[in-house]
Structures are given as structure tokens and as C-alpha cells.
Image (tube, rainbow, N blue to C red):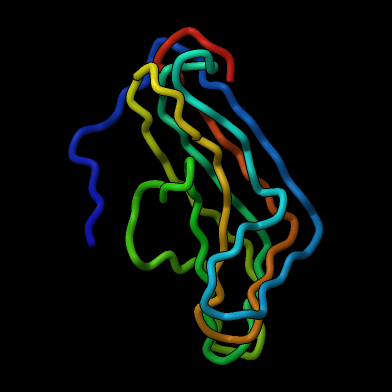
Length: 157
């Protein structure tokens, strides 16, 4: 599945609103085959009438020290916006891999999502989720989630 933006999205004229959250604790997944929300890696948000903006462009950056273990091992990661996958989208969200018994690394991913300006209130909560595809452990520590919101009207984050 290809997910390509043909024309750039321009969100100018307004300063972006920024939210940041982080945690230094280690979190590990040892069960394969299920997407799991990373505890605390959540930024609540809404768009629509009566919320900070009718719509906007959201850009989320997630960075973490990762542990992946087992031979071979693959850990997937994605960022959702109101329960929908961010862009670029694909069926392969590979974030960390290892060919040895255990490997550490520092990795970053960026996803974006656009909410057209409309009065209907929509959930835009940003969440990070992980998935142990193969191996025996997928862990994160010292992670940071930053969300930039470029509103389509005068508003607060």
C-alpha cells in the first residue's frame, strides 16, 4: 500500500502549538502479535466547534532508547491520531530490529495527520503504540513525544 502526499499541506499564518511529554522508565512487551499503547505516551486533543480549533495539521515526533531481543527480532511502532494511523501509512511499521541476542538503539519516527476545518467535534488524541512481531522482548526507555499543532483558525492548543 502506497501513501504519498502529492501536494504539500501549507499551514501558515499561525504559530504552532506544541505539547511535549516524556518518561525515563523502561517499558517492555514480551507478548507477540498485539498492538499495545505505550503507557503515558498520550497527548489528548480535539478539533471542531468549541475546541481549540476547527481543524489543523498535527505533526508528532517520537524518540526513544529501544531494546529489541531474540533472534531475529522485529518491533513495530506507530503513532495514531484519534485512533487513526498517521501518515505516511503502510502495513510495515518496523521501528527496531535485531540479528543478535539483544540490541539497544536510539530511534525516532515522525507522523502527520490533517483534520479539515469543520464544526463537527472529532477526537484527535495522539497515542504511541508498539507491536512485538518477532523475538522475545521489545522495550522502550527515555522516550519523548512531541506534538505540533498547526491550527486552521485563531486558537490555543
